Image 1 (tube, rainbow, N blue to C red):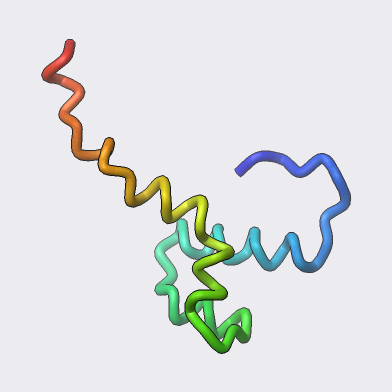
Image 2 (cartoon, rainbow, N blue to C red; image 1 turned 120 degrees about the vertical axis):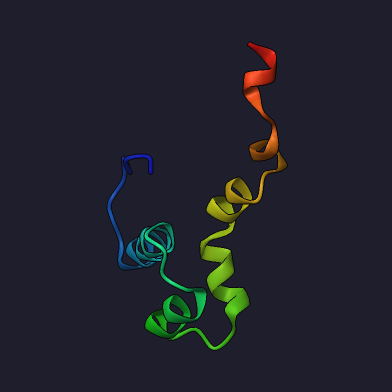
Length: 67
């Protein structure tokens, strides 16, 4: 994660917490419950960038074919 150049706020920390726990393998429902979100969609907003990278089809390209 990039370093934040401005003040760290409680809201920023919630996003950071969600992203770090997701990266560490925590299930979405656990993160949702910890952050007290009623809907999983709210938690997914916090994880949008990470989930986009994880679901990138480019991960399926065998780079060794192009060496």
